[in-house]
Image 1 (cartoon, rainbow, N blue to C red):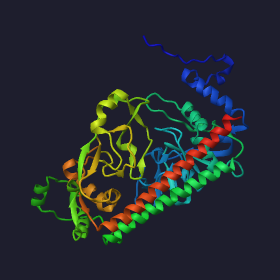
Image 2 (cartoon, rainbow, N blue to C red):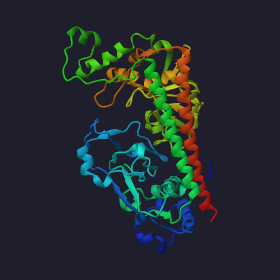
Image 3 (spheres, rainbow, N blue to C red):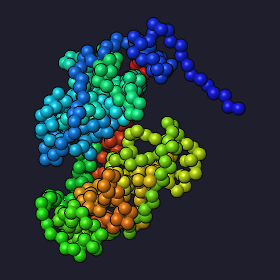
Image 4 (tube, rainbow, N blue to C red):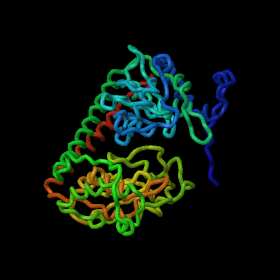
Length: 451
């Protein structure tokens, strides 16, 4: 017989905080202890030192030519705002939502999904606006340093409050009135602020290095000034429709053939000849756990690394049964084939986890730099081919037989290595940025714990 340890806490009626919440989860011992420690500091309500709002509540209108980025909860990732997959919102929607128009120094807070991640708006992210799943926190002058606030909100003393205040049956939401009630320190820690500034500097460095790698790749392939254009009309032969088994007009956009024409003078090899493809495993949502071994889904992969986004886990028993066939190793290229097909990332170290069925492991068969190959897939060279080949009415799918046919230009090895080195430096700078932000969060936690 297994003994169970029951966690409980006794709450006086006078402690029920106006009886606004009566659910036991709200009063769990961990939360009560953290709030007790937080109250040893001079604190105040976030709403007293900041203007707080959410964004667009209607249906967005996108316009890639506007240059106005549109951020949602998925773009706020544990201290940073990732604009690599952000769409552009129309000027009409931006003008309609002036209250949520972002400014340098604003802090964004995710309010749906993985609740409570905070990130700082920097100059390079502007102009931009937000949707209703993220809150804009605009601090008043001479109150808190936004760099310090980002560290605090991402620390355990910020996260426990945002998770605690979230409500909802099917999907948890953190509403604006609750964000205004969050307790924050009244004083800044300049050392912590500097760590966050340094982390953001490393992140900018990472982006610059990755951009240099892309530029060098395109220069090598004489594609630096290539601008694909959408044709409003074009003629397709019936024989082409029959041979490709595709009848959708988008597939035959002339821009796709133009990029193939541009790279055909290179040493082109098919992806299936360069790598072997191994599909992941889909155990079903019933197997998900709150802790255990990592289950890596499509949403957990970006071209810059793995993302802790709504992370799922599997039991150790299931992991042991699957690891031989579905656990990725250092040096494997993880490639998404469903939902957001065509995201490639070279795994830097082996992990204890299983990849989902929407992900492929690419294992090199020929002597090619893995970082170079991943960049080719992530660049316009791969993305235009993927846009043409992938299909699906609701969720996009990229079939393995089409993946194997992806054309990869294989340049001389020294040039490959130069490009791969820049990508590697980019990843190292991003890793350092995460480490600095982690250190800033720990500094905040240590300071409060020692009070």
